[in-house]
Amino acid sequence: MLATLSPSSTQNPSNQQYQIGIAGHKPTVLTRIYDDNISVCIQKRNLNKSITDYAKFICDSHSNIELSLIVTPTSITEQLNKSLPYHDSQFVFIQDIYTIVEIFSCLFDQEKIGLRLIALTKAMCPRFHTDRILCRLITTYFGKGTEWLDSNYIDPIDLATYNEMYSNQPYLGKIPCFHLQSGDIALFKGDRWEKSFGNSGVIHRSPQLDQGEVRLLLTLDMIS
Image (cartoon, rainbow, N blue to C red; front, side, top):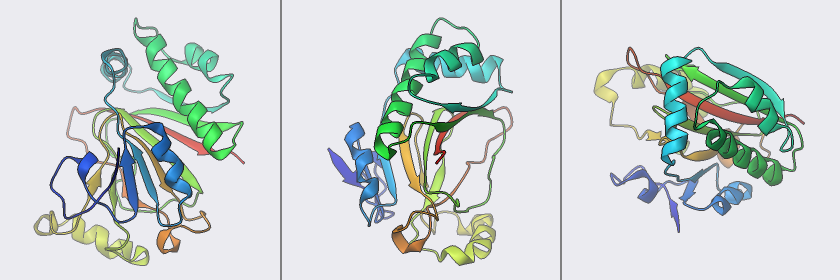
């Protein structure tokens, strides 16, 4: 079942309406990234306990982890086995990343993929921005998810003004901001996508983290 997302809705994010995005519970929703009027695709997921156990283990015991790898669908499992700390749930966690890498590889016909897995204790990119890329896959395994805006509601060239407004408490809640949930797999078009909605990439930022909070983030990028 598919759902478009809208700023006017106060329901669960999977049921929201949004003008330039679409969400669903099956991986096929990610193929809609090729629609000219779609800039955000989200596969809604509830992670199983083994995956969340491993993600929590990383955040609790290895909160300085930062992997940056060039991977292929055939190499990813071995690379992560060598790079990630052992835990009873490690295999299930790696298999989940393998599945996501395989989807990304097939979707964009990419053999080599740039993978980043990082535990964050503060916002990596705290200001709203767009990325000068074609498209990026984002998923948060633990903690708060990425925030983004409907580009119909803000001129991308006026991001500095908007960032100032959004950091001012009285403005919060007046301008729609959307949040990925932990486990969601999202595709965000970047500025280099030839027919991106509004001729710019998705406006987004990292969530603010409270003291003691940790977030485990996975991103995939095209190499060629």
